[in-house]
Image (tube, rainbow, N blue to C red):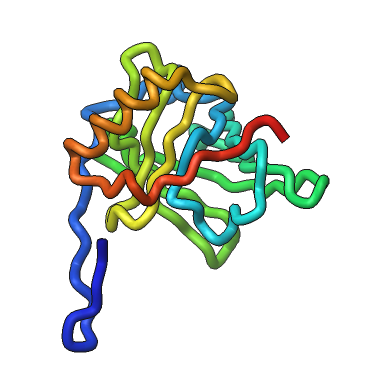
Length: 161
């Protein structure tokens, strides 16, 4: 957790990523199982992300959720950071807003993923299905705890809606 000491922010720990990500296997639909509840997603249910590899080698991103009975979505483009094994992506949501997307853990069969940022201030647990078995969720939490993430902050996402 970040705290201000004498008016200065402490530097967050940079998380390690997985060694490599097969972009073709990673593309498709991912459902948010839990997150640190970013302000952009407050009040959202049925949150998901869809990744499509386009002909130019970029990944087209569409993040969506339901809020107050209506679907909200945002589109972006992502590209791999050089020498990251595709585990680090730069995501551009608009001309002025870019974000970092780091795959910090990934199931061998690509059934779930954990994603963060270089500062560890954000964390998402994603699954290929809207629901994750509790035993799998507990295993992911244990792995993330071992990597130094504050998993107590995670808020489960309502996929029922």
